[in-house]
Image 1: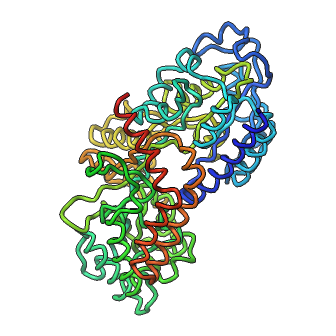
Image 2: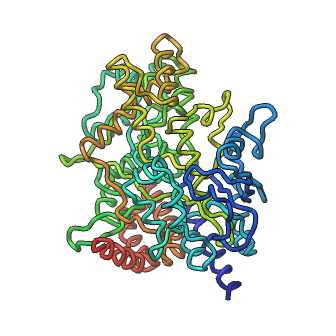
Image 3: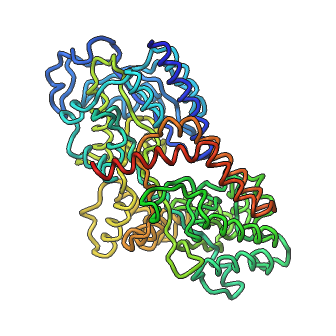
Length: 557
C-alpha cells in the first residue's frame, strides 16, 4: 500500500513541477529544509529544553536535509554550505546540527526530491511545493506540526506567518492538522506597475500617462519618433517577452488595465462563486488590442523569441515595460550605469476606462517546509524558522545574516519566512526617518538601506537602485498607494491544489500562453472562443467545480 502511495506522490510531484515552471518561470524561491537525523518515535525526544520556544537541545541533535544550493551563492573564506553564519548560530542558540544528505543546484532540486519521495527514504525536514504537501500528508508521510508550532513558535515567528491574514497557515492545515510551515513572503511586492523612460517622454514633449490609451500612444511614439534622438530607427515600443504571464516584460499589468486577470480565480457576482480570469470576455478585449499593437509594430516584433527585456533596456533600445517594484535592481541600475541620462520612472497600472485598474497578486505560498513523520525532533523545524525571524526582525537582528561581507548569506538558511510586509515596512520606516530626522525605529536592514539612500543623495550613483525602491519616492511608495486605495486584487482561491489542478493545470496554463501568443501575433481573435471551450473541456470546468466547493465551504467556516 505504501509503495502505491509513494508512486502517487511522485506522479503528483512531477506534474506540479511542470505546472510551476509554466506559471512561474523565472520566479524561484528555491529554499530547502532541514531535519533530524534519527528515525524513531516522533515524540520520543528526551531533551527537556525542547519544551521551550528558545530552548537549546542538550545534548545537540543532528537533522538531515536534502537541499539545493541557490544560484550565485558565494561564501566568505573558510565557510561553506555546511559551515557558515547560519549553521553556527543554529548550533550555538538551539543545539541543532545540519547534515545535508544531498545537495543539488537549484535547477535539479525538484527532480532529486521526486526521486527521494519515490524511494520512501525522506530527510527529516525538507521543502515541498503545494501539491506535494497535500499528497505526502495524505500518504501519512509527514509529521503533524500542530502541537510543536503552538508550543515552540516564538511570538515574532507567529506574527510573520500571520502577516498574510493567516492564508498560508490555513492552506497548510489539512483535516485540522498543520502539516507544514508556509513560506510567507510579500505578495504585494509582485504587484505590477509600468516603468517608462521619462527622459524619452521629455525628448518627445509627451505628458506622463493618465490612462491605458496614453500608454499605447507612448509606445507608438517610442517606436516611431526617435525618442533617444540619435537619428536612427532603433527603438522599440512596449517591451514584451515570450513569458507573457511573467513579471518583467510580461503582460499581466496590461491585462489588468482591461480588468482581465491571468491564472487567478476571481469573484463572479452572477453566480456568487469563483471563475478563472483567463476565460473571461475582458481577456478577449485585451488580446484584440494587443494584436492591433503588434500589427502596427509597437510591440516588440521579436517578443516571442526573447526570454527577457534586460538586454534591450541596457542597450538603450527599450523605454517602456511592465514590471514590479524591484526593477531598479535589475535591469534599471545597469541601464543607468551605461547611460547616466536614462531617467526611469514607475507609474501605476492605468485603466482602459473610468474604472480603476486593480493590480493582481496571489497570497498562495510557493513552497512549504515539512518534517518527515519519522523525525524524532519535529520541533527542530519550528526552531529553525524562529532563528530566521529573530535574525531578520528581532532584537538581535544583524545584517550579516542577509549579506556577510557581500556574500548572500540569506541563501544559506532554508527554513525561512519574510512575512508579507518586510519591504513595505522597510520603506515606511525609512520614510519616517527622513521626515523626522530620527533613525531610532530602524532595524539593521532598514538602517543599511537608509545609509544607501544617503550615499545616493551624496552623489554615489551606484546606490540609485536602493533610493528608487526604499527611498521616500521609491517604487514601494506606489505599492503603499495601491494598499491605501484598496486597489490590489488577490487570487480568491487560497487552498492547496486540488487533485484535478495537479493533473491539468500545466496543460491549461500552457494552452493559454500558446493561444494568447498566437492571437497577439495574428491568429483570428475568435480563436479565443475556441480556447475557452477547450479550457473547459480539458478539465477547467471540473476544476472550477472543485474551487467553488472549497469557496462555499470556506465562507461557512
